Image 1 (cartoon, rainbow, N blue to C red):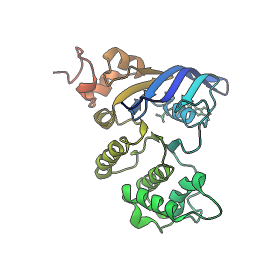
Image 2 (image 1 turned 30 degrees about the vertical axis):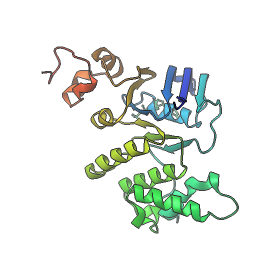
Image 3 (image 1 turned 180 degrees about the vertical axis):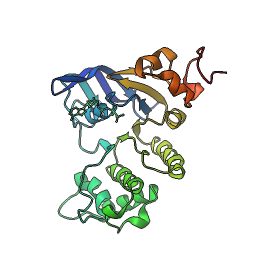
Image 4 (image 1 turned 45 degrees about the horizontal axis):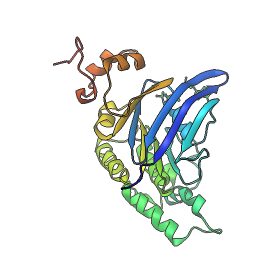
Length: 257
Ligand SMILES: Nc1ncnc2c1ncn2[C@@H]1O[C@H](COP(=O)(O)OP(=O)(O)OP(=O)(O)O)[C@@H](O)[C@H]1O
């Protein structure tokens, strides 16, 4: 039988920025090949948590282990940030952006034929291969987002972190994109932050809510009490379509049958 590995383990983790507590006593343990969705209100700390897992923010207190190690190895994490800060006027092609995901594997001054093959495969996966010679600055927001997903995949990570990856994508792409994530999930652990609760609850295996601390119970069941803790107005949220299969039975809620 295959040994079950823990992909990410976080214990009593706190993050402070400019003296202010942003994350408080976060605990999380997710298995390899899990597909965790994280939802929560604006400013709840979702991006900060992803950055901690990616090794970009150091915790003020607490422990984090990624693939059983207390330091994050290059190549373990593929990260698609919510906003990518780079100069879109910089003359760099789509292909070069994706190849930059191979930097950790690069031997010598040039990318190898294998690096190009991997970059091209990832571009095909996100349906952007035909754009590979275009300048990144010429692309629309949704197209750029797909290229950044391809870049993260080119790392061939064990854990893929995605922060609102479909925020600027059109509906047609969104469904295909989630199918792609399910396919990738056979090979890697995925942690997805999204405000699209309907899509998240449909595709993820486990679900957590973040509002300064993390509410997580290793399944997809959200109680009304939990939603009340996390969201300022859960009733409104439910009325706008939170799928009932992730919500425990409750009374007196708009739309309840
Ligand atoms: N570099 C920073 N300097 C100061 N405050 C910060 C910084 N980064 C994040 N914060 C604060 O930390 C809190 C959590 O931010 P974070 O981006 O993690 O939330 P989020 O849940 O991802 O929000 P959203 O859903 O709006 O993207 C916010 O109050 C934010 O203002």
